[in-house]
Structures are given as C-alpha cells and as structure tokens.
Amino acid sequence: MKLIVALGNPGPEYAKTRHNTGFMVAGYYQDKHHLADFSSKKKFHAEICEFSKNNQKIIIAKPTTFYNLTGNAVRSLVDFYNISPENVLVIHDELMLDFGTIRVRDTGSDAGNNGLKSIISAIGQDFWRIRIGIKNSISDQLDSADFVTKPFSASEQLAMNSTILESASQLIDHFIDGTLSKQTEKNLSL
Image (cartoon, rainbow, N blue to C red):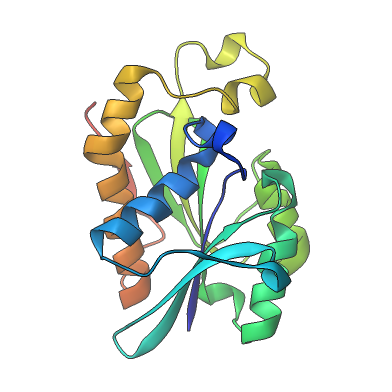
C-alpha cells in the first residue's frame, strides 16, 4: 500500500495559489487516470481518492487541515492503514527552488516548509517528497506567507498546466511502480 499526500489549503479562495501546488498535481493525476472523485473522510482530516495499480492499493490524500497542520492528517492515515513512512510520498510547493524546478528526495529536513515540519513531527523524516519550485523574481520582495498564498501569474499558470503537472504526474507513477530515484531533478525549460 502507498500513500500520496498532496499539500494545500482547503477552500476555493486558495485553489489557484502557489501553496496549493500539491492539490493541483493531485487533481491533474486524478483526471489523467480517470480516477474516482475525492471523498471527504473526517476521521482522516482529508479528502481521499483510492485506487489499485500493480496489485497494490494507492491512496491520494488532500488534507482538509490547513497547510501547516498536515501532519495530523498524515498521522491518522499512516496509523489506520499501517503504512510505513518509506511508502509515503508528499507533493508540495518549494519556495527555495526556482519556478520550473522539480526535485525528488526520500528523506531530509523541512527546509523551512511548515507543512513538512508538521509531517516530520508526526511520522519522522524518512518519506518521499516531490518538491515543486515556486520561487520567482518577486518572491524575495514579499513576506513568504503572502507570496505562497497568492495566485500564480498567467504565464506561470500556463506552465503549470502545460508542463509541470504532467512531469509531477509521471513522478507519481514512478513512486507507485517503485522506480522513483531520490536524485531526480527536472529543470523544465519554461
């Protein structure tokens, strides 16, 4: 069994913001593979989509807690389904990486990301991450909390829709298949 956790904030006001990059990837993956709709599971503090691939159960979770409290949802899912951290993949925005950069890691610190900090506090640091860069020319001019809760620019949204979401989706497939490399880095030409 594998758990894929997409980070973001609940509510329509956050739907197109940089902090909801994980939710965008999860929605894209769900649509691409014609998976069932996400359903709200209060006991997990998440909306989940369940499916099977290669004879294993896969759960994609979008926590309904706010971004900085996602460890609560991850802990409840890991405990209920008895999933080891190495079978968990977290997809999140990364302010330390330039827009258009995607990195994969199988362990590490929170790098200042409060959502990861919450998850590390809940299950430890030995889980997979797909880090999607959101840094741009104005990110250093704004408070980080303000920047991550702003929508992508029109050109950034176009790049998300045309390239980044598909690249992240392919990495999810590699995670499910057990072929994801911890040294993966994609610098997309945007």
